[in-house]
Image 1 (cartoon, rainbow, N blue to C red):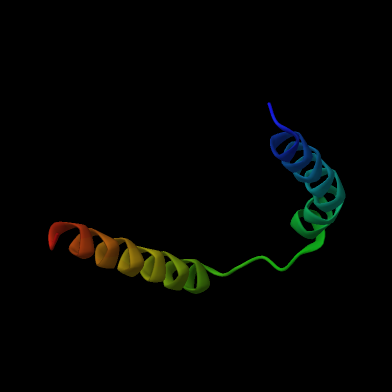
Image 2 (tube, rainbow, N blue to C red):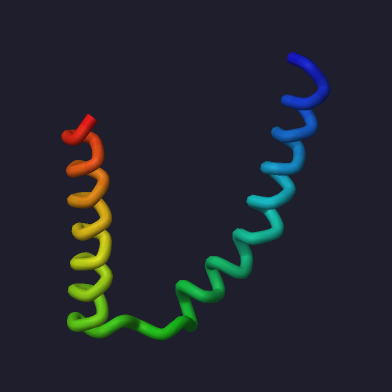
Length: 59
């Protein structure tokens, strides 16, 4: 392993340890989405997946 890979692994580990407490707090105290909001998000993701699939089929 070269120093670039070691440095990247250290930075990634530090990032995870710094972000994890905030993510846990947001999951516990954050706003819960309604069914309509979740369906909107799923429709958007489905549209993106369909677009990517169409791009792959056109090649």
